[in-house]
Length: 276
Ligand SMILES: Nc1ncnc2c1ncn2[C@@H]1O[C@H](COP(=O)(O)OP(=O)(O)OP(=O)(O)O)[C@@H](O)[C@H]1O
Ligand SMILES: [Mg+2]
Image 1 (cartoon, helix red, strand yellow):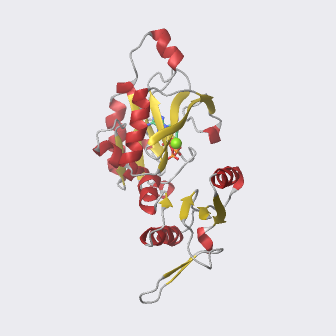
Image 2 (spheres, helix red, strand yellow):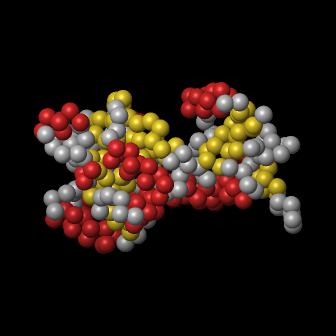
Image 3 (cartoon, helix red, strand yellow):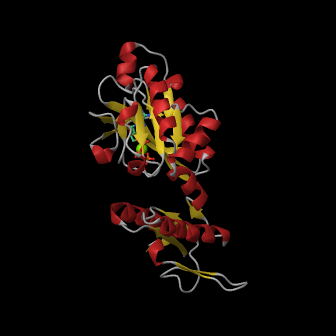
């Protein structure tokens, strides 16, 4: 039987659903915390020590989550994933893909470089440069979104309208990531979340929110919806550029609400889409 290790510190309902899906495909599952792994390195015979796999490595590793920690702890957890990849074990997503996608600066760079519509963004460790960018974008009448370089579920995001409102270096761990704000709906916000797996969109929801962030963790609501071709192609392209086996891609579009768009008789959304 194929043995799959699911990397997570909190299996929860996600883990239970993944286990069920793997079992249904004939694979046995064991949850694994990277905290409990070790590398035992002897010349010619390095060993990746995984609890529950004393008799050999799993056939595949599915990474559901990596716990935060000190820089050393996080790097070591990624080392274990790198080592598994080097040992020929399929790792989904592999450590390189995780590094590209968890870091918003690198993600935005890869997307912008490829010509995928991305809001104007600045990543800098220099506060005066950050202030100048707020003035530049502000001159065009747009606020900015300040994001932690590593973050998810909308935590730590702030709207910035004035250079003086920028938090100090300590509050942003020394790096300001600033992105021009995209107006997505006349009130509140709306966007798409597309799940790309194996190169293709496998599922999608539309999210709406009374505030400007659509994250479900912050009260955003999900609606079943079928994305149009331009949104699907954009999500698939983003996942492929970041070389991710699976990815959740957020796409914001001006007037993302289809009903509203139809009512206003506007054209397709292609030119208004942007991956954030
Ligand atoms: N440039 C932007 N303009 C308008 N709204 C934005 C912008 N960037 C982010 N948002 C809003 O904030 C939400 C959270 O932002 P984002 O998706 O970048 O961070 P996250 O959800 O914390 O991290 P990740 O999606 O990488 O896990 C988005 O879903 C969107 O609603
Ligand atoms: Mg998001």
